[in-house]
Length: 221
Image 1 (cartoon, rainbow, N blue to C red):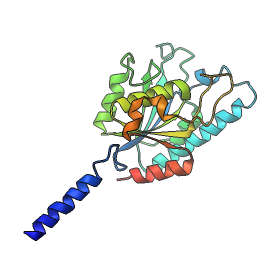
Image 2 (image 1 turned 135 degrees about the horizontal axis):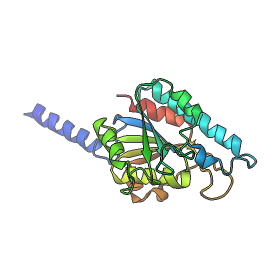
Image 3 (image 1 turned 90 degrees about the horizontal axis):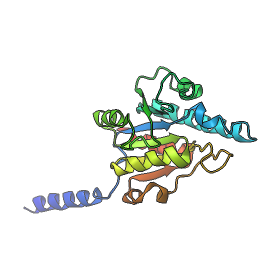
Image 4 (image 1 turned 180 degrees about the vertical axis):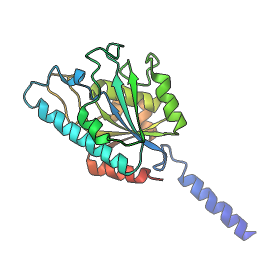
């Protein structure tokens, strides 16, 4: 009888420890890169310092891709369907440096969107993206890409509203002109900008490649 009580007590302790809010580190994680398309960086690319900021962001994103490949995480690309016409010249795909970093990696998928946030109910391609997440049991997204002050923050907010965990990789996020003509990199997402859902333990930041590496290591089952 005493053994039974001890087992019950120990189980209660484990349940209590595991009852904290948030997404467990072992939940299936994917790397998501948002809107790294020429259309967004072209207007202000000529300004002093901006090409270097773009290159730094691409370098950090490529490093994140390599870490994800090593850990066999899904890698997802989002591309804004600028003119709702795949043949339009503005619909230039993701930067070739990132496509090269992905290479022939099999656990890779690309999706379109036609609103800032991929989870926006007005996004024509929303259901396809959500269906992929559900079918692959993805519960957490590591987010990088552009623009930090619009599409990235809207996508993060939408993910949190759906109960997904989010890791914002600051050095993989860049803004090409939401606030001014100078690119902003790294771009730090403030929890208060991604709705109150950030308070429930689902939102976290990785402010360096070493912090991101630690996040990815923990996500490996």
